[in-house]
Amino acid sequence: MTTGTASGMKMPPIIRAPLRQEIRRIILESILRGALAPGSDVNEAMLAASLGVSRTPLREALLGLEMEGFLKSDVGRGFSVVPLTERDVEEIYPLLWTLESLALRTMGPVPAEKLQQLTEINAQLESSSADAEAALALDRRWHDTLLSPCRNQHLLDFICGLKDLARRYELAYMKHSGKVILSVEQHRGVLSALDRGDVEGAAAHLEANWRVSQEFLIPWIQGQGATPARQKAGR
Image (tube, rainbow, N blue to C red; front, top):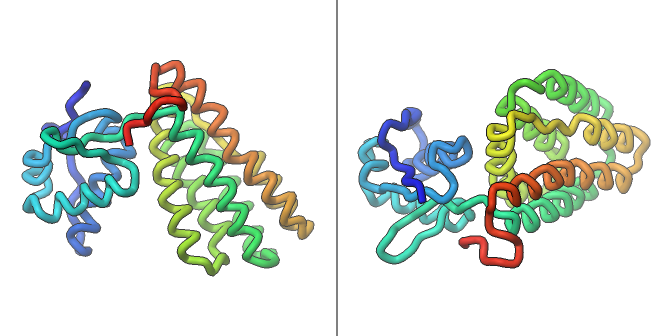
């Protein structure tokens, strides 16, 4: 088991925002980027010192990240980063394509200017094949822009949390393999279907979009010796 502490880890500065929220943002970014590695322990004392905060708001942020599925805690050991598991991938991605499709179905017709905006983001994504973080950011922007007309904020918030969980897997895969997963063709299929007014066709392309990542990730996790779906995933 590795030990992920704040020692030697460059932390971004805390900006003006509710303290617990800002601490959560910084720790989550460290988890997503792998500075706090999957399976590693969190040294609360060193992390509090690095952030320049007391243990109380830090622990509140850690408890929140545990509820979101990024951390787990054990009596006498404290917090650790949830490992990457096949089970997680098999649970997260079907939820993403199901809920994004639901959001898409509630939006009504997508105006031409929105389709043009999405086409432009997709073109930027196609040009980002050498940069995993840029590609993931553009892919997230594309999906967020697509679903922005949805008025169900609870649904959008839940999708957002799932995307954060998925990003951890995709970024880890891309950094480890040196490959960048792009969903440009699936995005084009969504846009083409929406341009025809075919919402169900667009939903089918959205499912294919998320399946692309799932199909890359499961064999990779199996090759890393991660926890298989039939075992507990460390939650």
